Length: 130
Image 1 (cartoon, rainbow, N blue to C red):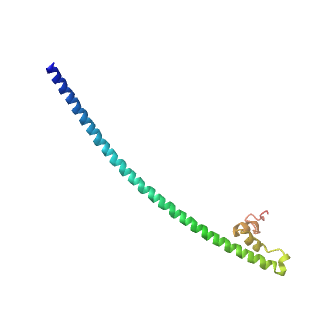
Image 2: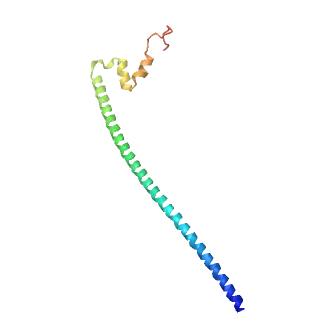
Image 3: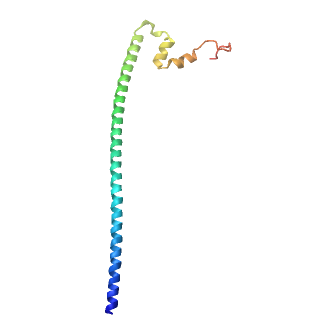
């Protein structure tokens, strides 16, 4: 039994050595994968930081644009109010406003207004219908 015990002990030692080398190889592979994942996370962190910076810049630009728009709206409202007061105090306040003035007050574009009042003769020789 002594001889069989020595052989079995030798076989167990060989199996444990093989298992230890297998675990060591798995550990090395896992370390390599971990390094690549760490690098990927660092890249994503940089991307996230860049996106946050871009979002902050967009937010600031939007706030600035909103402020400018509010200032322009306030200026236009003040001008419209001044025009209304001038027209109310004028003797011609009971008269109908010219079409151009009404278009300006309604903020209609020149192109939209000109299509409705275009009285030119078409190439076919008929006037456009209104």
